[in-house]
Length: 311
Image 1 (cartoon, rainbow, N blue to C red):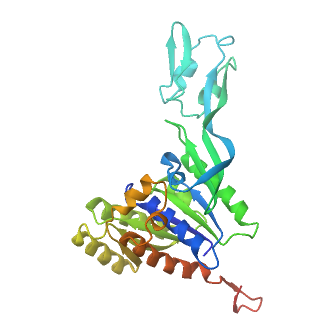
Image 2: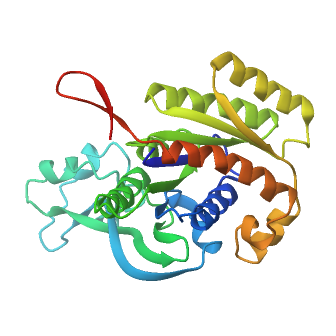
Image 3: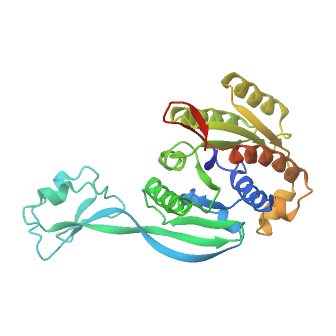
């Protein structure tokens, strides 16, 4: 395994806490694993809050383009307003103006303007960062409010992580994926060898676990499951076990509800480091041990004669 993405069907399941703990455990194994970490939850990035880090590189992210009217060349014919399907163009005080929040960037107005008075302008949508942390190189990003193209930003920082990994000095790319099943999730799972889905025994947790399993199955990503706060609702935990058994998805472990987890977050530290003997840390360590076995496995490839060999 060279790339592991941690997912959750919904927010608030404890996914990022698990990622931080896994990063800490990989750093303490013998020999220590060299990992590249990606926070792909760019709409609400927070992994950096629990990983001691220092930003090394800060780069702008341009997520799309918005139409701009040059008032000096506009003849106020109104064609642009008629052609816009998103009602982004209005006539105020005898001037046509474009609402950048409503503009979809389709450029239909640009092509229809007889005076060539409209152009497309790139919009600064956020920033992405390369940081050094005590657990490895961290790629993370910030998407500005009301901006789109989060899937494109996820793809960008994953590409940066892959370029570092391809230098041959690291053992694993560990990705903290976004919740849900949308475009950012599809970008996050692209190229992954396996996914660990963190779920919780609630009605919403069970429902969204099924949705994210359908997503990983569609992209042929091997999936594992861990149940967080498994002891708060035993019937829900039993239902998750039943679903995973029917789908032949392996459950790597159950993490009990543990107040040491929020205490560690307050301290800005993984729970396995802040409270290594807590019940949550012990459970996560058992889950990590199984993941580490997968990471240590040598990949299979084919010899020229068609026989399988160990790389």
